[in-house]
Length: 87
Image (cartoon, rainbow, N blue to C red; front, side, top):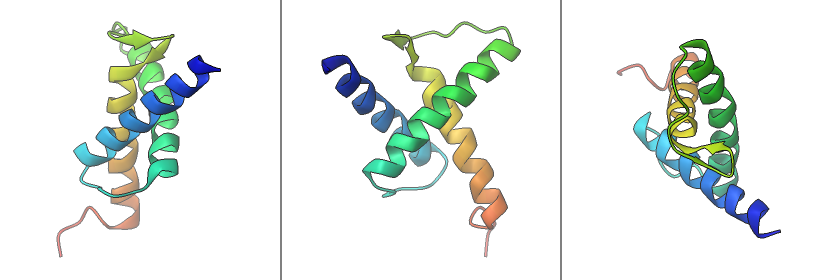
């Protein structure tokens, strides 16, 4: 049970940091959590495609790649929604 809680906390922090790097702040806990898990999937896939190491993992959760994946995902969402364009 503690491992699940630990993964949820790590994913939430990774999603929040990734969103901040992409220019979005104050998205909320559940959104940050979802971004952390999407970022982990996207980041792990990207690392495998580029043949790069997973770097820092906690319980097989790629923390660094989760942050990178979340930032890329939020940046793409910003471009699609028009929030990334200057006014």
